[in-house]
Length: 261
Image (cartoon, rainbow, N blue to C red; front, side, top):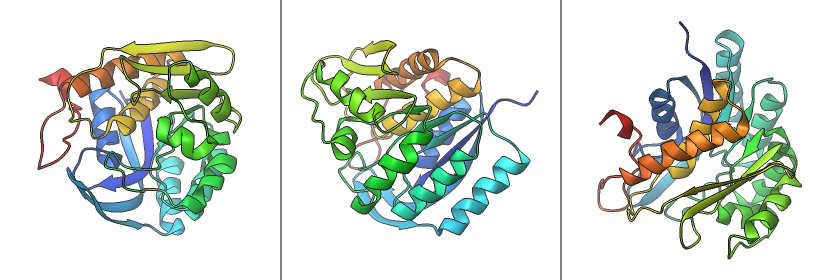
């Protein structure tokens, strides 16, 4: 039987912890068939990003059409889109697709390296976010996109309202950078779901954002509701963070295969 098909539109992480590589590992672990549209290639390891090269818009468009027109897709996840041109190209492709879309508006890497041109922010706000079934910004990305700074849990509502103002159906505001438990707020402006997990004392967390967004997309492809897809994704990511391991001389990745160990 053909498993549900999920497409990631994102950048390649040569170190294997985040990006396309994390997305495909997550999809395999969660029982869906992962497919990819590579938007950029990075030279990246546990210490940071040493270089990034975006692909031409035509190459991104051709990959997308090749997969969607022949194989079909039950959910799409977007990650690193690098430039305004690629953001607009991908937004246009997504607007013509019926599948649910999870937008991870990647702005900076775990190490603080910029992965999105500042000139692309307006395109993310006006073109990409309106295509999203769920948008999954972290607190730095919320600040980048909306100007809202989150200091406490109660600020998460304000952040969600600001993100929803740009058009996604649901916003999942990731509060992982706050003190205390790892708390995320998922809301469509009416329905509110607080996703809590204990914070694990493990610095090897490279790839958490990509992994969470891909896990949500996997759940949606299986037919789960947005709240249920987010809840199961949070459980999967929490386990992956707990099992994150050292790699190289810096921050290691989460363990995408933790359930198989």
